[in-house]
Amino acid sequence: MVKELQVAGVFAENTYFYIDSHSKSGFIIDPGAQPGIIYETVMRNGWTIEKILLTHGHFDHFGAAEILREKLIAPIYIYPQDSVYLTDTYLNLSANTQNPITVPHYEELYDGEVIRLKENSGFYLKVIHTPGHTPGSVTFYSPDEKIAFVGDLLYEHGPGLTNFPGGNRQVLEDSIINKIFTLPDNTILYSGHSSPITVAQEKELLL
Image (spheres, rainbow, N blue to C red):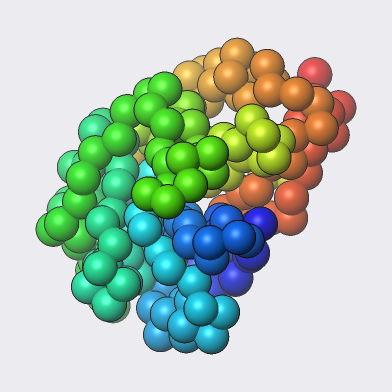
């Protein structure tokens, strides 16, 4: 199951919980801010978080990650090309905020990798490298449930932004067309800053 929690730091952002309803174990995706609220949500529901997954390296998607890593004893994962963003406040866009953020502890994940639960290997997300918003942006995709967590690659109203360090409009559009639009049309896309939309609906906007 997917549960969405909107958190607010400098920006409002959608944090997602992807949880196996049988074992109550799962993943947090893009914990952007307010670690106390995210942690309380996990505890209240009796969930076990095995991994913290980041779609990319902007601070509004990982602002709560380090505190949650410690409290939940769950490692943080990011694509290699965006790992430098976690320790560079210019790249992760927090340098000009009142609270510059870095994440010193993380592990890397790779294109095509399958991230599974320990006790239920049938519950998983596949990593799809979808650069453009940042060089190491990824999508986490469940082919069984036909859902995809796309970060800031796209929104319900169109493509994501590319006017930040490492952004590239052509690369982003290629990611959308060649990777997201090859998923089944009924796949639900969960983004960082808008409501869910299906692949078919996004195609109507962009094609």
